[in-house]
Length: 565
Image (spheres, rainbow, N blue to C red):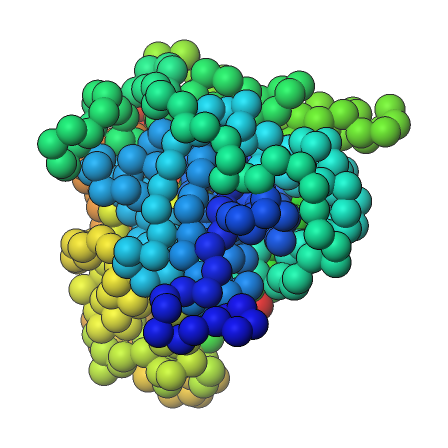
């Protein structure tokens, strides 16, 4: 809406200042963002947003704070002009167009921020950390709330008062603006005029290059300052007054034994449709999201941030999504819980139990394609059948996956099976993330021979002996010369080894099918072949496995469907 009495030919009616910040207590680690929208003329606080993000990197949190602040400003007045003020030189220089955005994790987040307002309506200014206290306090409030297993609440926030900006009431975003949700932040007009220093009145400070080890980035325009880091810039100061670090992006975890290169299911009783389309969803492993207002699948730690620490003192909390910032609670119990979660976050953000020089793993985010017309009918659909495309429901699922992965901002490359349903799913995600899709034949589904297009019951009726043999041995082939699960296992193991070598230290989205994804997980766990019959894998679900330099592997996520709800 425009201000009262505004001349429609005089340009935008209002000018806002958006101050945003994000931090990670460990990098990656328990993270949150904060953003505040100010009236540029009066300094009045118009809206606040904060959210606990789970385990992500510092730079992801900063970009999420920027998006939330811009969305809150747009909700107040879509015709306004905005001055963004942040103490992240990386974000300011990249969004101003002076530094290239080389890191693939940051590209979709920057693109999302650029879409909130039309080009030319937003300017960016770097400010010292001391001048960004309001947003910083909001980010820490969100992380502290996550440590207690709660959502950040505007009604309990003291960030506005703590920074001395005003003593009046406030209207804030409910639970934090949702970056990338497409709905904008929930905001309203302030209930009273504010006093205190206007947000626009702070004198500009001389920019400095963020401290800490960073990779050099090349400015895209003459006169760009510094030899800045493009990827996840390291910032020496803590994201919190009490705990936390900001540093270069890292992703590692404790290694686990890798299974054999062959194998697949054996006896399984009545469960034979290990790769039948449309297996029932079982909810999947929820991300460790703490207590933020994360909705529509924006869940906290996604594939890029491990979901659980295998150690006994932390695994149960991480698997239950209990949050992990290192802020002490109000009781001994909450302090112990927060401490355990911090230990968990630090473990998955480091080389774990292995040698310190093992380096970051290759992390495979395993995405099963969206539904096809055969999925709800639970029919065998492999690589030897009709090669169906996605249904309308499947395309909607792919869009939701894409939005969730864009919010998480961690995927650096996409590789897909050559079948139509996987290529279509991968294409939808790639368009959102600004990445290309590579095709890998080893990710294709098993060939089910004469069983293609049939239900499990129809196969039992027509080919009972062949089905019983198939259920009893991974070496048995489906009727008509299909592919045995042993052959599929060998193919997937060889594909795994090629991709681990090609994408060492990177996070890669592999868009595949039921049997290959289950096989990746089975081999990582060293589980027996019959374990494939004991896994449920839903359409458009996410799983994740990390592979280390010593040959070990760690399963970090399985059958996550939170982004579809």
